[in-house]
Picture 1: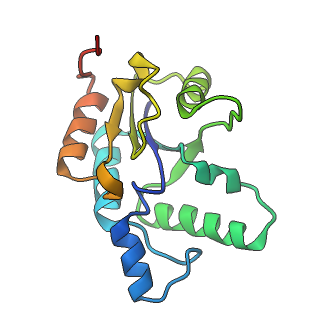
Picture 2 (picture 1 turned 180 degrees about the vertical axis):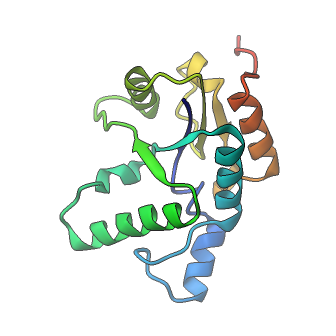
Length: 164
């Protein structure tokens, strides 16, 4: 299996998508997500057969009984599925660990031949092996062509060298 770990804020939910929601007077539980990011995620999934893994703090809301949180999560999962990029998995919540620990834990349960991580925060500097799979998303702008191409190379097994 191949996996794409994806953050929400800054990657799927970007400045562009938030501005569009404001223009349309959409609430967060009904908003659309970044069209460019969704296009590149879909393309990556189709080209590589990778599954999408939610690694965002948004996964705190999975299974929530709170009506507003439930509506936000339903919107996320529905919109992603409608795009052809269903969120199939999510990383575990490790409250005393970091995002890198959550990715490691998920990978232990779901061995992957290749994976890539999209995030707009650099959580992976202390995990050199995981960091090689990381594509930093600039300034909450979502995935662009260069991010897509870098991720494609990683999913095809062409990892960047380790930092020294």
